[in-house]
Length: 366
Ligand code: AMP
Ligand code: MG
Image (cartoon, rainbow, N blue to C red):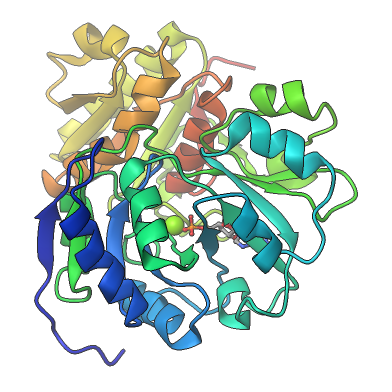
């Protein structure tokens, strides 16, 4: 794609009290129709003025993202919603009170003001108020809603630090605001309020249980279970087959996801490390603190994501862990599974995508 190589500046911005002059520089770029990378509480975003199709087009070009993939519009206060959304269902107010600003994106009917490029031609629009002070300050200073997908190249893992964004977008964006690592670490929950029953299109930073406490009829899409294939023996190399349904969030290295009890996961993973080490493959292991002792003498490179009992730690460390193993020259990543509760649902969703939908279970299991 045509793209002149521009200088990318990384500008450190205080995460709690963003410096006004720095925010103003980024806002001026947004107002002039440019793109800017900025931190949110979920992941780093690649933002542009959501109301200017020419600006939004630059997002797709910088990411290499197909135009068929709609963007999330970020606003700074609830009043902006009326500008973008044709019809505000009653549940919105309860959800907004409970979760905004925060990692919940709502799919709502769009007003014609929202360019078709933002919504991939759909008559709905995805909107959220982020809670990161830098994101909020930028939207306010720009004086316009900001359309922003994650600031990674298309199909790569989302960035949770400015350095990740730089690794993917260096020379393709003028400015990256650097406020350190993102607090949540996985993307927002996308909730569709235009379907008959409110449906989670993407699990994320707000858990299903939290949502149901406010809207009891929230459901997960029915096809979720059909996307998972169970495989008994990792050695089948099935992982090399490209995933057809679950292709997002992929690291550039194949990932094998193991599930079962702790003992079963450990046994299956150790067996797999042994098999691959015999073939001189460089194996990376993505685990929790509780597993480190089991693998420390295995010969594999071990990377821990924090305690398995603290999904917020694992979520915050997940994408950085995938990138760390990728850049360490690992040829295959073996990853343990995590419980699907709270943020655990988003963690499992991202791992399943990275694993192209395949889960390895211990061969002795039914
Ligand atoms: P990203 O910007 O990379 O975080 O991805 C945005 C997510 O929101 C994707 O999963 C999109 O498919 C979803 N999304 C955005 N707009 C819409 C919409 N109008 N209807 C359904 N999903 C949407
Ligand atoms: Mg993305």
